[in-house]
Image (cartoon, rainbow, N blue to C red):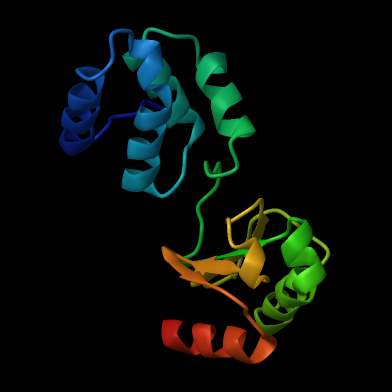
Length: 161
């Protein structure tokens, strides 16, 4: 299936490329631009980005699969990210993740991205969100929350409804 990038994305990527002496150096920024536009990185987008940067698709795919901030599937409208690193785990992040999953009828044993059937919420464990002193921490879309209890989690979800 042919991939046609929208003109606005083409323009944005062309602008990004002007800031780098070698196209390859712009790989992460171009991936961010594509994900910001589409919400995720499809196989077709990987191939388009590779062509744009004069690279092989594997060079882009290895970045998408290495960095957890890049998604290979669509996420929900409200993206809940629960930190799972040591401080947060000790502070209750596994219970927090389990609570979100139970509330949203998702599998609490799965650590990857899960999206509700209606596409409203996604839940996933992520690596350090840099709030170790106020664990457990989480994000809902771009909002950062510290010291999240089950009760606070319910309040955060209600704000999304």
